[in-house]
Length: 400
Figure (cartoon, rainbow, N blue to C red):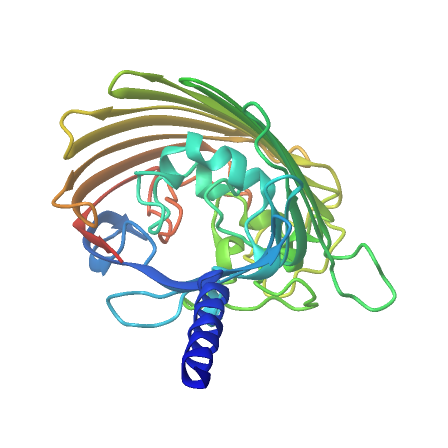
């Protein structure tokens, strides 16, 4: 009898232990993408190289049931270049995501660390460059991703709240601490967004305000007083011709709104953004791209995009997009206009493996942020030697 009681107690404890263990989970996931890139004009020269349409990455995410509908969560995600194995995001180990938080189905989710903005969470799906048009390569975005819809710049040292989805409505807010001693607001980021879903209709809008953007978001170190360098040797996206000359801005403001509508196998998307580099000449941007010494004023970018995805068969998807961006200029130094076309096809070999072919064409006119004649400058690429740039990439993506 004693032996039976002992066995029952042991089995009961084992079952309880298994149940407790089942309430916690850690998932390893990732994407490996490799493609062959052709660019007809990189500073006047043809380029042939390995690249990636979707950012290669690996990560871990986990959850622990704390009871009462509350869970502890975390995500660590590292980006890398499949062709060389080097780290992306300026060489940061977990440069894509690194956060921990609490989540409740009733009250929403609070996370803290390095993460995407709420605006990106609720509006990026409307942009071709953040979806099928080579989000990893970056070529498919609006004017060097000046509105950050493609998350060229993540937000570090931040705390974010995302509400539950209530009858299709969801809101999110984020605040990033600059970390500068004696100055609470320097290098800080304020962000808010809202989305609404009703059947085939999806809508979203976001607002972002960044103090000292050259250091707060473009350097991969939110508390930095000097710019950091990316894996390619450039100060992230501030070394492009389109807006690199505005690194001395005291603040950056981004307003973005968009939507999509599903019609059978087709999804039509629209996106508008207004980006302002304000109070130019206020920040000593060490090592910035050469350009005019602005003494004030605001440079404003207005950008619009229309795109279409069409599911031809369960395996084959086609996509197309047109993007127009107007830079109004600053200090009476002229303005610039950029037009871009994206075309792509994706063929799924399975749920986890797909083949793709994507093309990009951009033209430019006017005077750019450096005070010189505007040239084409696809995001993620070195600038063209003239006012147009044509590129294409084809390859394979595997998800695990």
